[in-house]
Length: 102
Image (cartoon, rainbow, N blue to C red; front, side, top):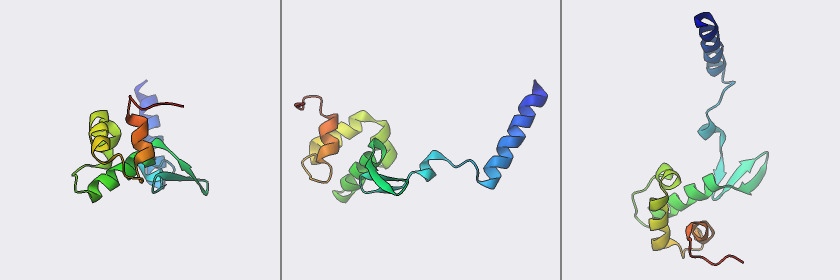
């Protein structure tokens, strides 16, 4: 068992060193609220949250991308304050539990 896990660790170390394993955060490229996937831009929650954080920072709030993604209360608070901004209105409409759904 120990030999097997040592071999697995060695293989993973070689793959990581050669760049065959890329961290997920480095692989995601956002353009505004859209993620670039195989040359096309698609809307993803990850990029929408990053955009919300960027707009919040432009208003002077001290908030990180990760804080918006990982803390729903922070996201709701920011949306309550700047949610009418056209750049983030769609993102904030998703977080509002009282919003009407058609």
